[in-house]
Amino acid sequence: MIRVLLADDHSIVRAGLRRLVEESGDMTVVAEAADGDEAIRRIRELEPDVAVIDLSMPRIDGLEVIHRIHPELPRLPILVLTMHAENQYVIRAIEAGAMGYITKQSAPEQLVRAIRKVLGGARFLTDDAAESLALRVSKGGLHRSALDALSTRELQVLRRLALGHTNREIASAYNISIKTVDTYRFRLLKKLNLRNNAELSRFAIQNGLIEA
Image (cartoon, rainbow, N blue to C red):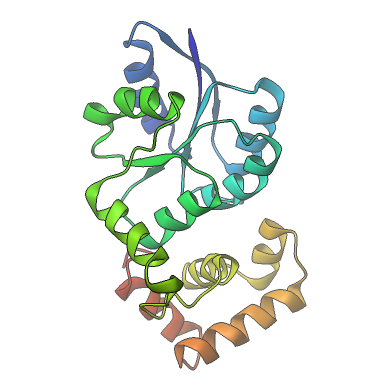
């Protein structure tokens, strides 16, 4: 049996994904996780065959889970799950070591096929994600937008600031100091030519990082 770990902060979503996995006939869900901390702990404990990780989780997001787990378990196929086709986050996840992604809306049709594909060592990408990934590595890696110019950590901090998280909460999530969070905030304002957190939030909404 293919041993699958599911990480998503919504119990109803996890229940639906579990049903899809276990109806396949040759897969079983060995663990579920409701946040990034639990996902990391359960992956280390059980070493599943495939991990399905939601990008938008509390405490530690899916992108951070990948950054921490992939260096430890580089052969673990990670499939990213996302509410929307947030290409910036998805592409960063692929660059961090994920093998592919599906949206929650497409999961009923694609989840089992995606799991089989990444388990076999192949990527599972939509056309939009594949095109975005190609653009990021083409032309010598030239930045094509303001978001492309941000580091992955800057992108993560931007998203959390836009969601209204405090500097202390952000520092705790990424194991960095509050002073470091302040530094990232200053860099973001300067790079994006913005003045305050309200403008950061508006920018994040306009660029699809968070919902209005």
